[in-house]
Length: 268
Image 1: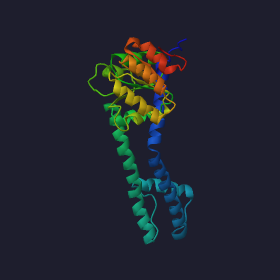
Image 2: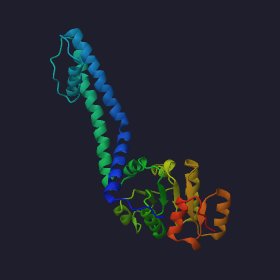
Image 3: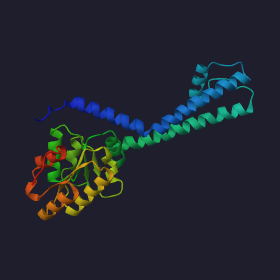
């Protein structure tokens, strides 16, 4: 039985939450450095003012460190060259960490609107149990429609930016990686290690075989569904590699979608 369609707003909300989580993971080093600078600077200010001044509370040291990182000193400096040097260097360190994070965030922001590989990688990092669909031709697009109707998350890989269905796929809000899936790191960008299945639907038998082997190398448990034009090759591939190979006589998109999702489905 087909599951009930998910509400568009709920699906969008879940996707945005996943993307936020992926972005936070991408910037975890920046956040960690900020915490280290903030806490370390606060401890040094707290101890420094206790030794060279009248003393301040740790809470006040935290606030002073924050403003120093922004280049806005809020406390009068004690008479200590070492302490003055630290206070002079802290804003440089804090602003450097912030600038690095802002530059990388800005790059990702513009990459999102350009549909760059970097943004696709951010999207796929937040996915688990999705289907990787290789090939955005007529068959690939119909398979995508079937999987979307079933409420399955899909990542599409297409080599040709000018392919007929590229804009339609982007209009569906589906992550679309424009790259040769056989290129180094292309499959990794789809988070193949967390995928439940991969559908190799290009019009090149050798390319589909290579994709399937690369996918199994990265994720031995991934379910592989492959489109092949050579009927004799279909039988050999099924026996040798334990994948679901469909010949040109079985090119119905529902068959591909079902084979990608259900281990109990086998085609002859």
